[in-house]
Length: 220
Image (cartoon, one colour):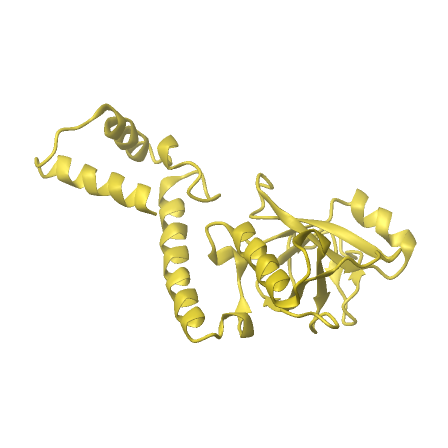
């Protein structure tokens, strides 16, 4: 955020005649005029390639982070529903949750595994967090919280998921019906966040979902 703020502040000063245009700022200005995200801003977060939706998303995330800060100050963050898409770096939140779980349970970090459940928190989880707003591709979730195949050929590409609870727990043995689902920042699938594990009805369904390219997105 500071990088973007410094760039836009300098460009405003150039426009006002209060600052000379450097080569770096000239490059950024040319990108903005062309409607692109400047290369020097790359890495702030994984977002749209065009500058207007990119800035819109950045502002939205900045506002959400302020709301997260207020929830943290009142110790309500982990008791509230969380949208990982609101964060610039959602992996950092999951890593912080892992470290806090390790501190609370006095278990080493390497012994903790991320698990996920639909609708209710995992059993015996020290710090479960409820995630909302996730999107599923390649399958749907039935009323019992189990992965099911898509029936309609003209179905939507993404399906809103019910609330997903995640937690770091002592290493647990995988079940034959568990499907490891890659979870990405958005539909470009350029940035992998983690893997969530959800159940299929049978062990035979697991391979079918994998071949179907099942995945989860934080946002489109």
